[in-house]
Each structure stands twice: as structure tokens, then as C-alpha cells.
Image 1 (cartoon, rainbow, N blue to C red):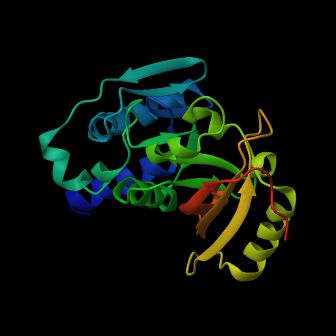
Image 2 (cartoon, rainbow, N blue to C red):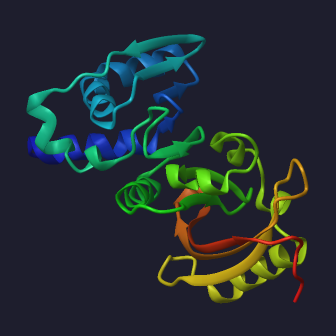
Length: 233
């Protein structure tokens, strides 16, 4: 195996076991020895990847201990990790807001797509119906006082109930789980804290099969307008 392929294999392994936090990257293991082995094998790649992503910190932990890794670029690794460099930043003023979540290759691809394509969009965990990634443009539709509040709620908490039930049925009937098609859906939603600030929203959806991590949806807003009260069909 040549060096470039070996490094790409290592990057794919890292991606499959990474926790993305609001400030950086983390790897958690059940034992101290497992964490140390991971650190010994991947410390150079971890440091380079963290710096490439704009992360402010990287941590490997296990058995109650943690080892910080200082993000820094390694020139000899740049060609191998360049595909990863398009992934999101983790600064408060970055392009994406990411809830702490395990990620793997399909979800990393979705994050890169969200960052590269501007607009009101995000990634939703289909099982929990919670948003786990939001673009900065989602501030226009923030639930609560700040964008991070929008990561707290399930869609069932702020969608008009008949619309949510119809949406679930339509997704199961018309949306391919392999992500090969897209549907558009119109619904009414409100601020879950106040019960007001109703909006009529149209968005597109497609599934992302993340393997053992479950099913996700990539959602993109197409239009929205304020309404005084929900309009039932």
C-alpha cells in the first residue's frame, strides 16, 4: 500500500470514529490503553485534520483521562488530506452549527455539501427528528433566542401536527432511503417556546443512509412567509 492510499485509509478510519463538537474534534474510548493506541497511531493526522478544519481543539480520551492534540498543519500530509479540508469549521462564526454527534463518510459528504452550497439548510436525524447540523443562514428561521436553540427540538415540537404526520407518511411512501430522489413539502411551523410566530414553509428533502449511524435527511428551505395562524388542509 503506497503512502497516499495508507493516509487516506487512516483518514477514513478517523472520520468513522470522530465526535464533532462545537469547537473541535474528539475521540472517546472505554479504556486508557485504547485511547493511547489511537493517539500513537493517528496523532499527526489528528493535528493536521483539526487545523485543516479550523478546529480550535482536538482531544483523545479514555478511562477518565484526556490527551489534547495541538492543531497544526503538516506540509507532507496536505495532498493526502486535501479532500477533508472542505469540511466545516467549528468557530462560532463558522458556516455550520453542528450538534455533538458521531459522523462517518456519508455524513461528512453531507456536511461538505452544506458548506459549499449556501442557503437555509440542515441535516436532521430521522429517528429523533432533531436537527443536528444547521447552516448559518438558518438564523432567519431560528427557534428560540439563538441558532443553537434550534438543535434542542424535535420537528414534532414545532411543526403543525397534521402536517408532521402527513410528512412522515409521504417520506415513507415517496422518498428513497438511498438518497436517489428528492421531495418538496409545504408545512406550517411555530416557535415552540411561545406557541406563536407561525410560518408557512416549503422545503426539499432527501434521505442520507449513514449505515450503522442510521437514517438522516438533508433539508433545504425553498421559501417561507409569516402567517397569523396554522392553515389546515
